[in-house]
Length: 271
Image (cartoon, rainbow, N blue to C red; front, side):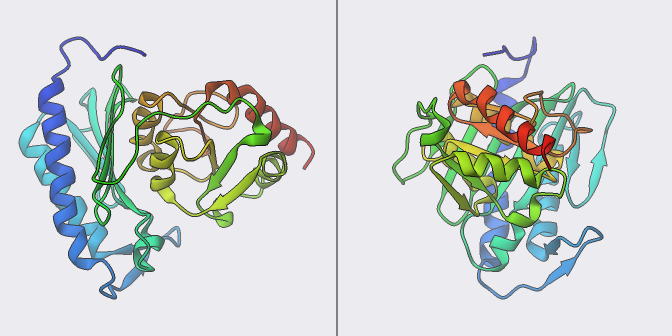
């Protein structure tokens, strides 16, 4: 694994991330299955009082503990963008799941150094599960539920479990590629948002392929998946970037990567 930056304030960063995830749980849980109203944003995605209140609380904790770090959130944009360290926050990843009472949403907290994710937290407030990924270290899984943070061996696409949040996130240019991949795997399941990536890190899922993803959707996932033994790239196998094409691919077994990217590109080529 790649090492952390020199003089990285590891303990302070972890403590800040844990405190932010704790306060997000406190804010989000009282709204769960309470019939909260959703507003529609400019991209037609829903947002609720839980999203906005949780992001404000997360920002307050992170800014108090590490005031020199930048913060970017889905709901309230970027502060202190000149810092080489930048928190990236999605207070409720999976707002549709949250609105319909399904505990597959999560709070995502990432830390980037020079635009590369070095820390990621996936927190599921309802089930009490938390995944913590830190570059160069093995992913940790904090939960009373069973699970070991280690991806499973699965080098054969034909034996793989594929997951995607919803068909509608597959944009038209990339849908043919997904269909080719789906025809090659053992099974395809829908739903999950960030929770699916936590399950991949526990060895329950082998492949996740999604589109239209923003940096706050994927930044926290990278250290978690890679710290459990997996790989995350775009659909062409290149590192994820904030200015990328929005495709995200996660595989539990790195041996799957060339075969999966080949199938995805073949579908795009023949569309």
